[in-house]
Amino acid sequence: MSVRFERLLGAAAHPRAAPDYLAGYPAHLREPVLALIEQQRFAALLLKRYPRAHEVRSDGALYDYVQALKADTMRSAAPLSKVCFDSKLHVIRNALGTHTTISRVQGARLQTKREIRVATLFRELPLEFLRMIVVHELAHLRERNHDKAFYQLCQHMEPHYHQYEFDLRAYLCYRDAAGAPLWSA
Image 1: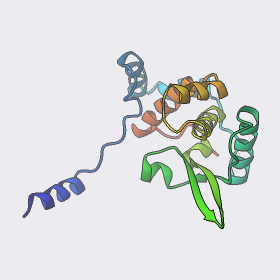
Image 2: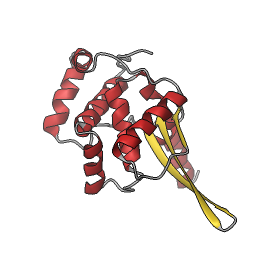
Image 3: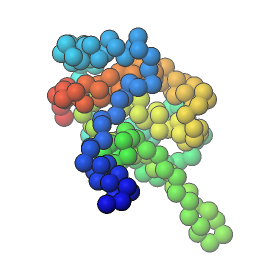
Image 4: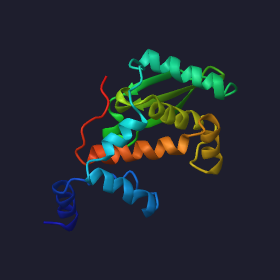
């Protein structure tokens, strides 16, 4: 059997480990969260901070929500042609939201369409988490890379952006540790 074939079999035989959503954070921030999850106290703490889920359930409601946020914070940004929940995002790309720009030539003009897709996981989460992912994807309309300017724009649109992102990542760690969903539709 060839080495290449054995590598392929080995990769298939060993499922990929769940992503560590707090990997980029220092130990003094990670360890208390992981300890709370292990002690089964994390859910109560998060429910106290974010008591209920939002009401944005349909693609149409999400589109309206994103357009209103865009109108408030990024009036001059390019228009969006589509905004929707996507059930395949989290599983396939290990992403919670995506932004795409599709350019097509129509005659002598270049037609550009911009889309934002949000993982369906966000249908049942607090409004703060939905706002964080929408702000993140809207920021990509102006800034392509995750650099200082990108995060400054995110914070301009949502002053608590970094806290919401950390809390969301902690919640995802909780869910990966076989935690039950905290909010329901």
